[in-house]
Amino acid sequence: LQARMRVVILSALASLAAVNAFLPTPSFNLRQSGPGVAKSAAHARFNLPLRNQKFGPRMTISEDVSAAITGEGQVMRTRIVTPWEQNKANIMQHFGLTSEEADKYEHIEKEDLIQAYAMMQLSRQFETACNQQYMQGNIRGFMHLDNGQETIPALVSDAIKMGDKKYSYYREHTHALASGVDAGAIMAELFGKVGGTCKGAGGSMHIFDKATNMQGGWALVAEQLPYAAGAARAILMDRQNDPEKYANDDRISVVFIGEGGAQNGRMAETLNVAAKEGLPLLFIVIDNGRAINTFTGDVAKNQDVYLQGQHYGIPGLKVDGQDMVSVMQGGRAVVDHVRKQGPAILQVHTFRFNGHSPADPEHERGRKEEKVWARQAVDPIKIFEDYMISSGQATQEELTAVKSTATQLCKDAVKFANDSPEPHAGLAKELEFPDAPDTDYNSRPAPANAEEINKRSLNAEAVATCKARIAELRSKAEEGVITIGDAINLAILEEMLRDPTTTMHAEDLQAGSSYDIPKLTQQTFGALRAADEIIDEGHFIGKGIGEGLNGYRPIIELMNANFGIYGMAEISSAGNTYATTGGEFNMPMTIIGAGGTAPAQSLGAEHSQPFHAY
Image (cartoon, rainbow, N blue to C red; front, side, top):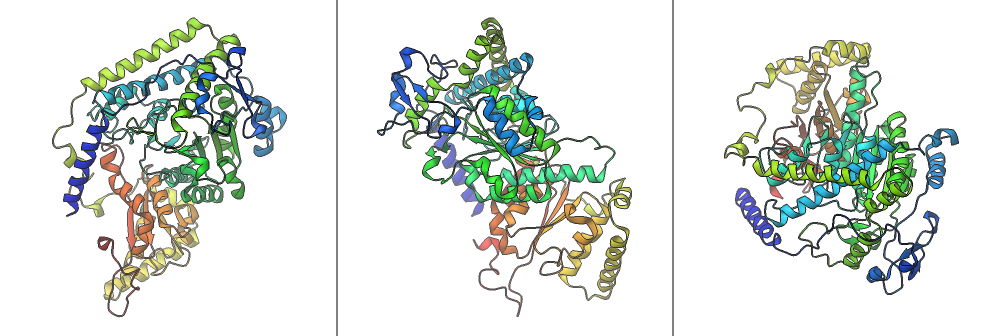
């Protein structure tokens, strides 16, 4: 029945995609004719105050985009302005920098500005090419474009390193480009071709690349947040396990989230763990004012996501995403803080020029009008071009040359995708499981440096206590009187001693949870490898996913198997990881949970219900 349901659902989605491919999509001009912020007499017909005066002066809107104005005479959502003086004051206040320390972020070299412009152009033209290929039927299914938000990938290419772990959501093409993933491989993935980053198995929403640490592309809103926290924990464990190799390690984990997605409870949970464990985790909030297409202000009481961290002692900064210079100044300061001190939030206030997807009818209040206004009044590329030329940082000829290079790269990417072969018939079966059915996991050798790591990182007295527990449990096993919980605890303790990449997550972990399954794990291996968790299974399953993507072997204990309903999204993504990534990433995760209705041991009507009964 499940298999049939999958076939029916997939068939329905395929039919929908076929219809959607022919639905009209608003055209997009690569370079808009309107000014960045209209200031001339010809465009000074309407002077409207910003909703939040602290972010800048009045904004002028031309008559030809007045349709974006509501009946009350206000644009639903206007541009904010964050000049350097304001950025500097906020950096000093929230990040504790002195005036001299903050000043180093003001000046940006011409070469860096040109590189930022190159990434903006590549991002814009790549997404436009994707839209064209979608309309031609070469890309199917769901696809989400990033036009209008180009300052964000430009910042990524400027301040984020290849060794940093990147976790994005379903609108991630440009984030992958900025991370160094090959444009042809990304386009081929969208085409569903073998030459794609994931052999065509992931598609538009799942761009993964091990070489550049691009770890998604995740389709479910906000699911990537705990994954990124798990990756940040993996960085800390790398440093703990091999302090010599990682003596000067400044890697960070980066997670992208929309301001709509940041209203999800996963945000609060991830902020909490980032602060509690001092994780090197950067939250980049892409604030385009639309949760899908719903005006975020209609569903969110407070859209200043960068202030959410205050409750946890995590600093934040909000910058004008239409101003490339402001994004680079503020972004560099925030990234440096994460590398040196710990988690931070960077909220980039921007505008998305396209609908949620190419087939989106955009019926939500004010969306179409806002898009028309934004394209003409606040195009970040046009604003940056005007700045570069007026400030003498670049000539029109230099910018044209950069633009031409981006055009050719996108043409080459489309050609590569077209020329790439289709997946062979057996690919799906190959990606079902990473190991052969007859694999003997008990025969796998321990890491060569396991004993050295344990000796350096573990307390000898705690290890002795753990080994005594192991001996006790083995004796019970030999006598035939060991319980299921103790048997699992024995296996976990043996494996965590044998392999220092094994980790443990559970509620009530220090006390052994309900059945002693994680007993003595934190007391022996420390809080980093054995984490006592908040009461939300989805959160710590998610952290396990991030660890699993980065060389660790997480064990997740559910106090009750039924509690796994809180983590069904994460369980689904964990199970799909190997196939979705085209075999790029394994997911060596073990999930354990007690459940059922043994005689005289019923856990109650709700807690006894197994997954297959839902």
